[in-house]
Length: 544
Image 1 (spheres, one colour):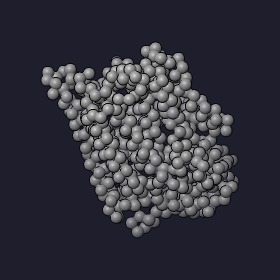
Image 2: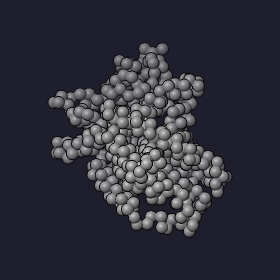
Image 3: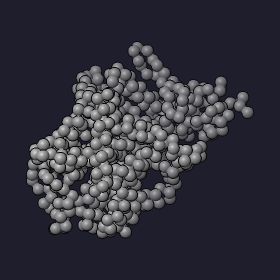
Image 4: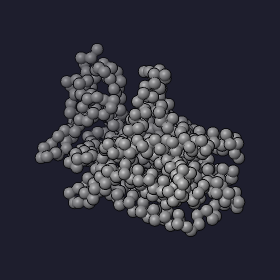
């Protein structure tokens, strides 16, 4: 490969030659560029998020924080509530366990965000190393990593308490070590360990495991019989512990619920009819969250190049090619493809590097003059930069606006960046702050024996520290009360939250005897707007 600084083959020869990694990271322009990139990325990440502490954690973030409390020696929260969260959660334990061990728990979410941003920074350092081993030109790989760090998909990850960063660190470690020393068995143990831990950070790590097993077996590489099994040990250990403690929730339960209403074939057909469009939109919105025409065109062109780059890596029999292909195939049948932007995040950087490697490879072989071949990567970087430019400018502009005193209370969450209208962003964040404050206050309205039906039960437990269950979804009052047997308290939200299709659900099922215990408001333009209410209701006497 012309001009390659550190190819996988060279890496393998170095490792096999002396059995160590000594000399691989020798002082060079590539290393200097990597150090500069590290400083720039650290500065950018921590400047952008130094006050990151979203006013309301109401999605997977809330689950991870309460799981962190469960694993933490520093937590003083109600163990019964934490046990309830663990019984419902099907998330792997590694990320919340790490948060809990360092004290990134519900009482210190600012620390949790700092830890998460640090992990994501390490993921980009791993990406920098791996990309330099794939690209023909280290400077092109380094610039691409910096561009990826500025994409909306990355910026929004910075504000979340999510496991993608940890998973990406482990994935890139496995890809780099396994491919760099394919015949050095002692390094393959490290790759297998990284894959085992990746599965404990995100269940989709099984895509990486399957790719690794196929890669080892197809090449009859050292350890092909034992290494895939060793990589599964952490997963088996976790599941044995989980089931022995009664924490049996898993994705298979979700699939079983889905198949109770439809056949497997109909589910697959339905998913395949919507997943490609969701994935394409997720890809485009990763580059520009507003999906303006320029980004749509540029993102589509980039997507085509990256898929071609993936095909080339598959043809070469590379581990990263196998992994991304299996991951995308799984995403096609995954029933939550509407979250494609987030789900794509862990393969987005890999795909973009594969695209760069393809363009460089074509450029070096098609160009009559070497200097033109070296510029192929520059053209590719320009396409990425132009497609992402509107979103990057918008994010930087909103960041600067957030430094102004009137905006500082709002510039602490991803919502500050996701809305085109600053006024709407402020309203959304004010709603979140009001809900978090109101749910904390409801702690005093409820005894330790009380429980609540809530549209967002885990988020409610995070703030109210009282037991909560998902509000039963029903078509009529009889069906509703057949399911609502645990609690007599109901939180009715003004928001619409799938699968509940109406505000203040289930108000129409509660009957005339329901008592309003409290109403939560948000101040908006000098007036108060209701956000939700806590209601107590018994089984209505007029239902047969």
